[in-house]
Length: 399
Image 1 (cartoon, rainbow, N blue to C red):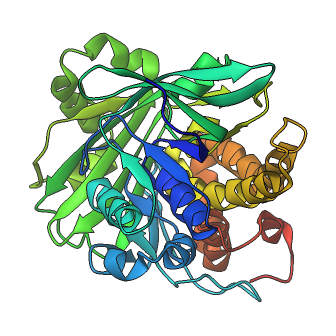
Image 2 (image 1 turned 180 degrees about the horizontal axis):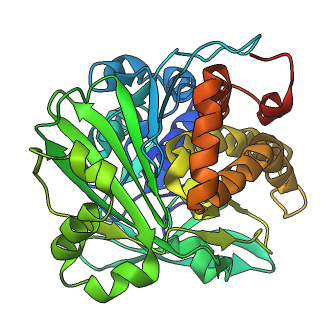
């Protein structure tokens, strides 16, 4: 069957897709939002929101709800391979001030449901349990998608613009031949733990090459535990993840001591390879938001903020293109330029950090330098937290 055309079809109702749909609807555009899941649904995630994410959530009208569900994080504590501990806080750095002077940890099911409830309150056609199977392209222009509903019926849904926010396994990116493998091959193993002493106000990062682990306290006695390891180390254990996970923790001595007496309270889930690249669409009528546009590594926790911020950027381009009636590849190129302007410098910092944490001696040296100059760690956290420009890392007058 063929449905009436919408201005925009948004594929994926996670943070990036929901944010995109909300902002488009507030511009008076007709929006169809499609997701293969039924909400609320579980999602593998580090469950971290940077200090700038609340600005976008406030704009979306969900910050008050999220505040009642999230755990504020005053900063991050980093433990180097040799046991050196450095702690930094999310604070104003020179003239750069965060929207909130804390990050937040929140379970993805709760965050996603808050955004979806906002979607339901707007004139958005939201279709759950609808799996997009293909992108419809005519004469070099995307004109909609093919989708299957919960009963397996095929629908051809038409729209002037398709925005893919369907995550790391994006059907849209795959059908358009845009996804490419990345040389950085890692896997994340994620679960929840309880019974941790003093795990409330700070996130904790344990660096122990070739691995690292992150603890995020998402509730009073519940922390998200993510352990990132080389893909080829974990892949042979895909049928026995819990066995591999518990054994691996024993090889990270500082993490093992931190978890002494704690309990794993959820199954171990795996996601990998983490890093992948996505090219620019070679047809018009398509934009990619969030993880659908590519992903590098979760060390800096940029995923959710990047999804929310890229939704803002995509909507700016989409609204202008739709108002002029030109959604050609050239007309949508502003979005790619905006993404490079907003995310490019931080991406370079992220890659530099990956080099540091991949080398034991360099990671120890960096931790010792930051321990002597704690203000520099606050600057680095500001960059990671999305409110300090990366140039501040080399600005001498910042203390």
